Structure formats: structure tokens, C-alpha cells
Length: 331
Length: 102
Image (cartoon, chains in turn yellow, red):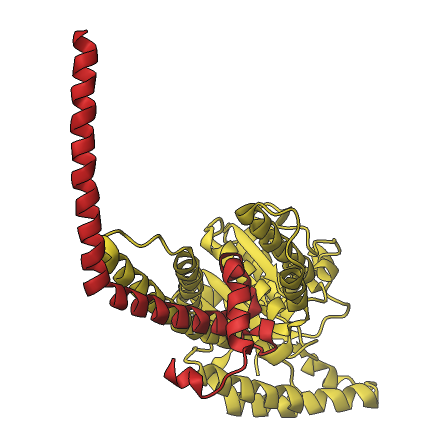
């Protein structure tokens, strides 16, 4: 275990880094620390992207980025925090406007407008909007490295699983559409050799399929994408990580490494005046660190201490970054 | 005058020509009716079934059948607008045994 610095020295081709794990264990701190290191030490144009609806990046950097697009914090370090609600609303308005423009209408027919508005109630709508935003940003290729801070639900892996389902769904409906186009062409040929009109639906479907496929291919490419999970030395986090590892394997994704976070300094045990409360917590952690080593062994890439104060603001992120990159704790 | 005469000739030629094209068109129409019309109708009918099936897969939500995920269905929706009414009528219409015959 030599820290994330050694990992990225070995894996120079990595363009996408994804941090997943339960809520409150330090995903945002880890992703911000790595982004800081990439931007300041490696001089890479870095985009830190949060899909968390709780606006954690705004909290950690003590600035409001939520729904404000790509913002530069320091040279080379850019942050974007997606406001999925707003993105969905904008998208719905775009669809309504397109219908009005296409058919020269002043108003969208009531029934269709109701349907468009009702899609906001669909939870997959927000996940899709976030996924779409991620795919769009990566496709623009404006940055050297993209670091994603995933929301806690379903280890963030659900996002990848969803891409897989979406991809299959689009494949199927493209097939169905191809058949429609085929019959269109047959009818046009039999009628007298004329060509069937261009199928715009097919064009849209191919566009969606390519977008999803390119992004899915990238995030499942073991050379260009790295997945990390963050855990703490406690039983629930260990069980959750085991489950996530299984999920990763089932999806054919390679887990790049684990970051063990919030470790209390073991040296404190030497202090005879140490409170019983702290002594118990440190002993408990040491016990679980052994379990982590047994269960995950080579997966552990960094061990980060519990800080004396909340890791907020650039100064603290810099400190956290050094611990994540060089991993001074050994266990 | 010379140019008037020429115009007249041209008009006559045109009339003869349009008669020929008219005849060709009629013959083509008869042949089309005899040989291809049935096939064209059958291809268009199959196309309609497939189009409705496609709409069902993409916009099933509109009939109360949730289909994942509406985010991408919405991109297809503008193109489906003219067909929505006929599609709904077809899906919701009552059916009886005569449907199997006709």
C-alpha cells in the first residue's frame, strides 16, 4: 500500500476515476483530494464532477457550484455539480419547443404536455439526466482527467448497470425501428422505385445508442477507467464493500482499489491518560483493520487518517490529498 | 407569323406527348394495380403494426404501461406526435372475432 500516487504513476492512461461507497465515509473528500493532486502536482486539466443531489462539493470547497455549470476553482481544477431537477426541466421544455417548431403549433397538445410533465415523477429520469450529463462532458474531451464523486445509493455502481440496461434497451428498439424502415423501403420500391423518406427516429436512436455505447465502453475499459471504493474500519462498511465487490464482478468491472478512511492514530494507545472512549474506538478500529486486510488484501491502495478537524476548504483538502497520495499509515 | 406557327406546332407536339405520357401513366397504373398494389398495401399494413409496436415500446407510459426510461423516449416523442391519436385508437378499440377475418 503506497497510496494513490503510486497507482496513478503506474496507470498513466487513466482518464476517468470513479469513487463509490456508502454515504458519509469520505468519497467527496477522497475525490476532491485526488482532483487537487492531479491539478496541482500532475498539472492535468482536471474536472471534478458530482452527481450527488446533496451538493457535497459545494460544501467541501465552501463555494456554491450547484447547478452553475463548470467552474474553475484554482488553475487546472474545475468543478461541476449537476442540478438534475433543473436539467430535467430544461430538457422537457426543449422537447415541448421542438414539437411546437416541428408542427407550427402555438401550444403543445394538452395530452402530450401532460405526458411530458408526468415524466418528472419517474426516478430513472434523474439518473438518466445525470448519466447523460456525464457522457456529454466526457465526449467533449475538454479535460485530461475526469473524477466522479458518485452518490451513495447502490454504490454508484447502479449508474453503470443502468448504462448497460439502457444500452440493451436502445439496441432492441433500434432493431424494431430498422424493421419499420425496411417495410417503408419495400413499399416505396413496389410503388415505383422512389426512395423512402429519411427516418428521423432512426437517426435519433442511433445518436442515443452511440452516446451511451461510447461512454459505457469508456467506463468499462480497464485501462482508461479506475474505480475506487472508500470504506472505514467498521463492520457495516466492510459488509457493504464486500457486496459492492460482488456487484462490480457481476458487471464485469474491475475494482481498482480501496481507500480506508478515518483511521484513528494507533500511537495514541501509548498515552496512559487516554480516555476509555478513545481507547475503545482505536482498539475496535485496529480489529477491523485486520479484517479489512484479510478480506481485501491487495485491493487496499491507501489508508487515510481521521483529521483533527473537518476536511473543508482548500487548505484541508491539500492536507487530505497528501495522505491519500502518499498513504503514511501502515497496517 | 413564323413564330406563331412554330408555337402552334409546339403545342400540338406537346398534346401528342401528354397523350402518350397519359397512356403510359394509365398502363403503369393498371399494371401496378394488378401486380403490386396488394403487396404495397400489405407492406404498409405491416409497417403500421410495427410502427404501433414501436410506439408501444417507446411511449407505453402514455397508456399507463411504464417503460424504461422516459428520458430517451422524450427524444423520440416529437416525431411520434402525428401518429399518437391513431395509435391510441387502435390500441384501445374494442375487438371481436371479425378482426380475425378482416
